[in-house]
Image: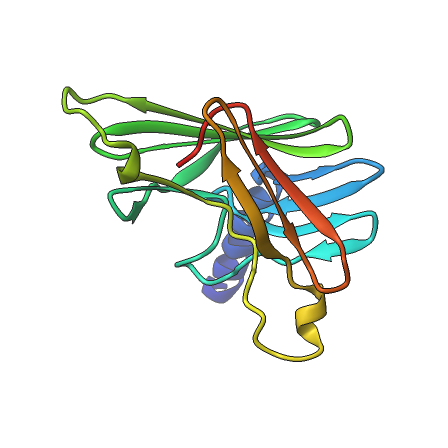
Length: 177
C-alpha cells in the first residue's frame, strides 16, 4: 500500500508539472524556435534550414555577461507571439525579449544599472550563442561564421555566412562594441 501511495504521489507531481510548464517556443510560417528555461535558443529552424546554437554552458546563448559572469535569466512572460526572460545580479537588471517580426527573428535586450557604481561598456557582453565552430568536414558547410561585423557611430550591422552561401544578418539600432 505504501508503494502505491508513493507511485501515485510521483505521478501527480509529474502531471502537475507538465500542466504548469510554459511552452518556450515561437513559431510562424518561416521560423520554429525553441528556448531553454534560461532563455537560450536550443533550436532554430528557418524555412526548414537549421541554424546551430551552442549547447555547452560556456557559449550557449543568447546570454548576457557582466564582468565575465553570465547573468542567469528565467522565463517571465510568454504569449503566443513573444517570450520575455528576466534576470539580475548585484549591479544589473536585465531582460531579453524574443519575437518574430517582418520575417525576422528579433531580440531586444534591456540592461539597467541598479547600483551607484558606473558600469563600463566593456564589462557587458551579449553572447549570441550561434555555433561558429567549423571542426569537421562536411559538417562545416552548415556552420555560420562571422564574416563581417561593423560598429558604426549610431548603429551596428554585420552578417554570418556558411560555405554553402547562406547568410544570417545581425543588426542593432544602437552602437555595439
